[in-house]
Image (tube, rainbow, N blue to C red):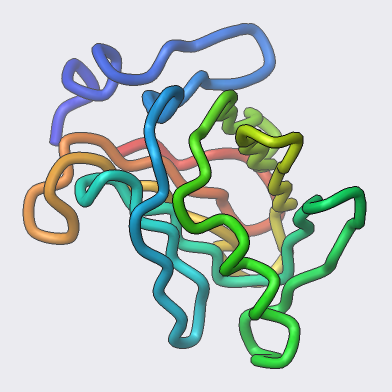
Length: 139
């Protein structure tokens, strides 16, 4: 995929990329060795390392490898994205309606998160991911 397509969908700011998810709803949540949020059947947010969620006034640490920590993510089903930013330092911040949010930091030894849009995984029209140790990979 060329950067020209991604540029049309993501908007670069000084410290982050604004992602084309605002106003859209999470309609599927998948759990395997990661937690994947599917947004309106076309975009995927795959979280492969521990991340933080804020729901109902409480903060939770979710570790996809520790299944007993994952259930709280189900509270995001049908949540509407109000803000979506990929920090150039490799962080991810998603805000949702009803004062809910999700935050993921990069990790040293792998890809903490990845977002693809379009019809993933076959033909994503954009891809952005946290690089090991920080930073972003655009595809």
